[in-house]
Image 1 (tube, chains in turn brown, blue):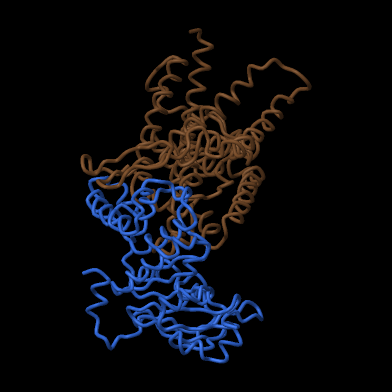
Image 2 (image 1 turned 180 degrees about the vertical axis):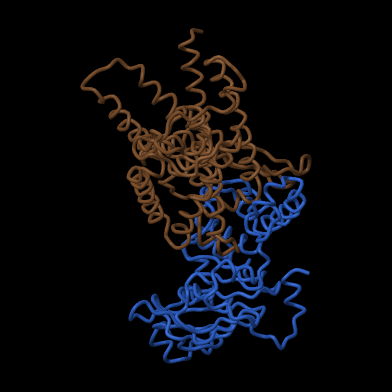
Length: 340
Length: 264
């Protein structure tokens, strides 16, 4: 493999890991709990900015970029702090939005929150250097490890994979427990869940904040790799790319969410880079958004459950025959006494 | 001791499990429920009937915590739960079914039942993170109970089917089964026979009678007079947001105000 391809593929793999994590976070909120979070990208961005300023070091007067809260923390503290920032911001947005509003209004408020966040960060240059954003963010352990440029990138691919595995194990533990069932109950019928003693707002907040933490971690992992972050990279449209990935891959199924991340933001959007240039400059980029929107519409219309739909969780008991069609996933209490 | 056993052991003096007093709900200038008062005695099925728009479902919603009352009290086992949110009322032993089906359509029948029980060990973030070892034993016992309920309602064939694939009548049954999984002290039923074919309606009626014989207290909104006649005693008649009459079905049938407002 040539150096250029090695460079490119390692970059794409890190992006894939970041998108997979983001889709898992959004899947927990939307796929499992039914929260239409149209502001998802801002929690990823909160994580990215937090990790960036905690890696850049204190801001010095006369520097080409201005920011708040600069520090020089060792890896993985900036990534952890990024997750906390995503969680805290989502807790604030959740308190405003999830307590009293119906889900369609929640979606509208989330969209507005996303627009406001972008406007504030773009306008207030003292916050995170305005529209120019932050750059020259040191890559974690790059000097200590002394890898070649491409060698370090493959190291980071491994690091991203490890973080993805941790996030996956964490999510599987939650979604396979009775808590995961309660999330899905809230998604399917809010009043019905409340009538069974479920604290609907509490469950939504739990799911929303965990999703925010994962979004923050994904942003932090990305910014430590690409060494730059600006408002142009987290416009509200990016949230819809992740929603499309979920719709295509399949909701309430972490494997489906990962597949969606592979198919939409990585395979589809990256694949379009290899198209021969046609039309005026920017036409292909604009068509990408049209295609993403069309893809979401087509799947919602023809395959609303996505490529890997939510699995039917079969619980097998003596005297209860299995019935129906779908993707059975047997759990035999007699033998394994397990619930999945 | 199950809730049913607890009810059987309760002294006869505590006749009314639920006492509604001067309960009212206004939307702007419209009085949907204009200060109703009634008792729901233990171990019986109390019928709540009346013409459309009488305020029955609103009253039921206020009792269950889904609708915040403008005034009045709802004494459940002596505790005033008026204005409490649904989940807190449910935790005090009140279960309900809805006029429109409220099943968790993306979950199987079995999962619907397993979700029903409040306070499961793995139903908190901490409990979930502690892993299967922490919550598995409780799930096994809940699963055994769910299997009993499913067998009792002859739904074994559908146990692992998505709720969205059930018929309308089966969904009604599922709601009742799910409510029973909470081991309620009182069950509120909002038109349980609506949209159900006659054969299944008969089965639902039989199940409700069995539950009554087990000592479960129920408050049922229903339009089908023959069903009310067979199941309910006492019967409360509402019209235009007020209680018009209360008594046995025989007494209700001979009440001229009821005849004028509803039965005729």
